[in-house]
Amino acid sequence: AIYVNGGGLTIRDALLVNNGFSQAGDTKYGGAIYANNATVAVNNAYFAYNFLSVQTGARGGGVCINGGNARFTTCTFRGNYAAGNIPWGGAIAAINADSVTLSNCNFSTNYAYTTAPAGNALYCSGVGTLRIQDTIMTNNMGGSSVLGPENILANITTLLTMERSVVASGTGRGLVKLGGGQAFISNCLFALNSSNGVHVGTGMVTFANVTLAYNNGWGM
Image (tube, rainbow, N blue to C red; front, side, top):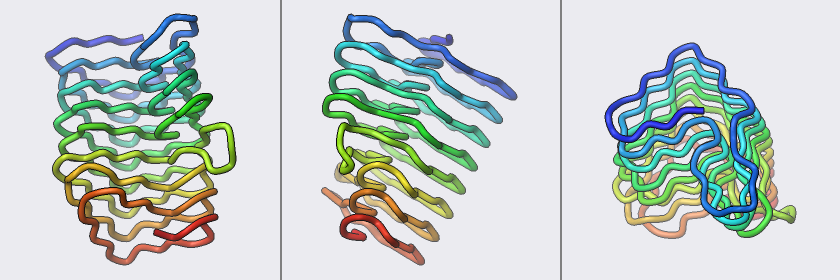
C-alpha cells in the first residue's frame, strides 16, 4: 500500500486493511507499509489483515521498517500475518533501525508461521533502541507447534525499555531478548503463553514490578 525510501512518512487517523503480497517468489517487505531508511510517525491507525505470503523471506505482515526510525502511537494491529519459509514479524518487522517506539498500541491475533518463524507480533533485529509503553499483545500465534517461536523477538544493540505492558495468551515465548543492549522491564505482565514468559539470550536485563504467571515453561 505504502512504500517510502528515505525522507519522512506521517500517518494519522488511518485504516490500512487487507494489503499485501501472495506469490511464489522470495523476500517481500511490509504488507501495508515498507519504509526504507525513513523517519516514520503513525498515530491512531488500524492495521488489519495485511499479509505477506511468499516462498522465503516475508518481512513484516503489516509493516517493515528497514533502517531509520519509527514511532507508532495508539495503533491497533489485528490479524496481520507473515507466512512462508523464515517469516519475520506477523505485525511488524524492524531491521537495523536506529529506534522503534510503540506507545499505547494493541496487537492481537497476528501470525508468523510455517517454517522457522520469528516474532508473532514484533520482530526486531539490529535495532538500536526499542521502547514499548502501555501496549497490550494478546493471542498472537506462530510456528507449527504449541511451542511456537515468540511474541516479541528483540535483538537490540543499545537499549530495550518496556513499561506498563502485557504479553499474554500467545504461542511460544512472551519475549526473547537478544543482542548486547541492556533491557529495563517494569510494571509488565507476561502470562498464559505456551512457553517461557521471558527468555534472555544475551545482554543484561533489569526487572521491576514484573509479573510472570501461568506460562507453560519457565517464567524467565
